[in-house]
Length: 264
Image 1 (tube, one colour):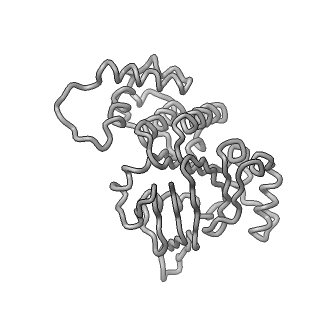
Image 2 (cartoon, rainbow, N blue to C red):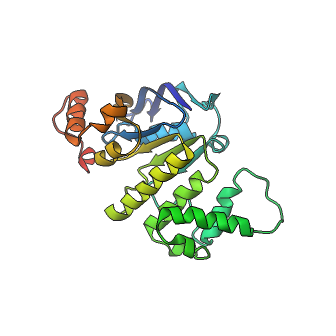
Image 3 (spheres, rainbow, N blue to C red):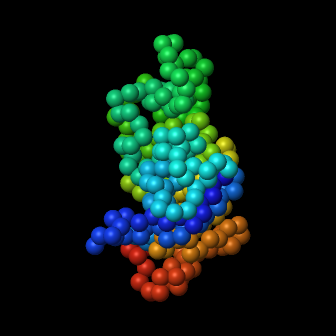
């Protein structure tokens, strides 16, 4: 479903601020894979998501989604294949619109807009059912303005909007990092439930090693712009935070793990 082949990306090339963010990155995701991604600061995690989504172009290499080469496609054209949730809960929703209006916008993504009636009774019933899955009581507040919601509620709604059209690929960029631990756990549980129910191919960046181990069927570690650890199945289930830190020390050549990698 996703094929990243030998991708390179350098920022500020030829200047004193030159930074090679991706260094021959290769990664393949099968249909239905739920891959968690960890790595220290500057490992290339967010850059990887940005080149997949088309926010950044690549210097070399190729990217295919669902067998379609999207390497040269602009971001707005790749949006037909991708759902994405960012770290900032304020992104991805329209604060001045109602919850049901936000969901209706997501449901009509990619369709021609006309002057027909707004939200139908059947759509409201569907949205209520979907919101109930989140376990945040939003199904009883469908006419509330999104700007009145907490950060966790907005992020859960953004997740629902990103998956409403069942994208070929779901990108989660540290989507619980700005939330308190209790709310983050609820959003992660909702994520797992939606991904499993709809069999969504998912790439989730997290700074929390425990979450990386607990969720998904594969775990990859990035270092210096490339994949250095890739574990799946039983091997992943048996992993511990200590073993991950040991692996990081091995590949980085340092016993001092990155601060952000230690947040768990």
